[in-house]
Image 1 (spheres, rainbow, N blue to C red):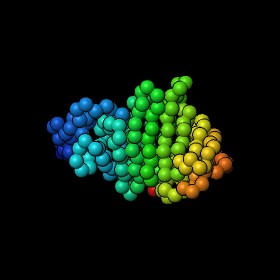
Image 2 (image 1 turned 30 degrees about the vertical axis):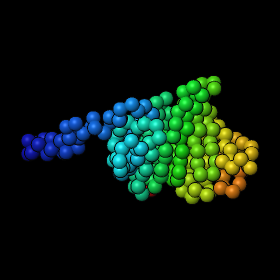
Image 3 (image 1 turned 45 degrees about the horizontal axis):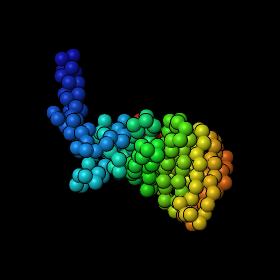
Image 4 (image 1 turned 180 degrees about the vertical axis):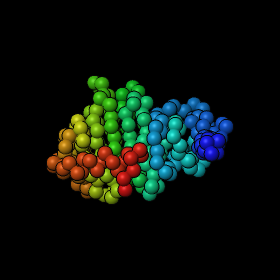
Length: 220
């Protein structure tokens, strides 16, 4: 009986292992491209759209991502991305995130949430560094913080700051000004208006954000 159990366990492990060469194929970036991040955890199904390669690539644990890659999740998918600077971007279900660009001379990194859910845990930035998250209605300028964005309705985007501070400004230049969102607060931004003043976020809201984007502890 013990031999049968051992054999069955061996078979399961072999089925879970990638085929020879598959892991390297998933992780290898095209020539002359710069690594931007790595998929450090994922749940269910997600895909990557890369300009230099036709069609969609199946996302996988350990897969390297390059600048301008688009990561998309299905209704059951979640993906955690570790950026080069060790910042973490956790994408919820039914979401799309583009790892837009990094300007080394301007010390500016930018990502774009087209729709869906995102939790961004950004490391503390050095003086002069900029990390921005663009959404359909506003831009969040990060100063080293932990915050969430709900762009499930791209015309009405919600920001919630768990720790630190996020500076939010409208994409529309006719709506100037910046709203500060400190830890424990939330801000909403409509497509035809600037961001609203920050309001208190309750404990349930903050706890929910720590769950709905986590690929390791699914909670639907």
